[in-house]
Length: 242
View 1: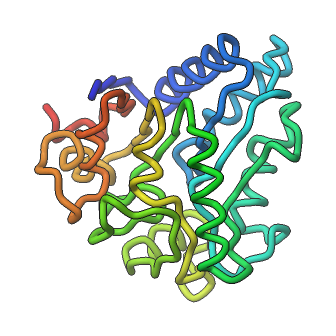
View 2: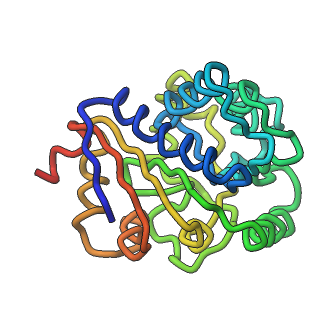
C-alpha cells in the first residue's frame, strides 16, 4: 500500500486523473472500475477536460461501476446511472454498450449473480474507490464478509446520513435504504486499486484502513492485503496518520 498526501482536494483529483489518463493511453482497452459519491467528481471533470483538449479516447474502454441504489430507475436524478452519465460518460466518447452498472431494479439475486459473472470475465485494470466515514467501500458496510461478491445490502444509518447531507438536501427519508454493490472479493480482484479520501471527516476511516487491524469492522482495511493499492488523500484526511 502506497499513501500519497496532497495539499487539497484539487491536487488529489489532479493526481488521480493523471493516473487514469496514463492507463487509458497505454492500454486503450482498459477495464475501469468506477465509483460514485463526492470524492471522484473533480477527477471526472478533469478526465472530460483532458478528452476535450487532448483527445484521450475511451472508445475501447469498458467500465464497471461499484454500486447502485435499489428501487431507483436509471433516469432518476439520484440514481448512480444518472450520476455517472452527468458527471463523466456524457463528456467522453465511451460506447454505451461498454458501460455497466449493477441493476437495482430487477430480481436482486439474479442481478447480483449476473454482475459478479461479468466482473469475473472482465478483470478490472484499475478500480477507483472512495471510503465512507464508517470505513465502507462501495456499499460494503461494516460486518461485510471479505469473501462477498455482488449483493444487496441494507445501508447503515451513518451512510444514509452522509448521503442525505451530500446528495438529498439533508432529507434522510429520501435516501434509499438498500443498494446493490460490488462485493469486497470483487473489488480485490482488480489489478490495481486507487482510493480517494479528502476532508477531516474521513481522517478516522483513513487511519483505520492504513494503520488499523484488518477487520470487517472497517471494510476498507482489507486493502492492506492487496498487492497494488494507491491511497491518495489530502492533508486533512491524513491528519491522524502523522
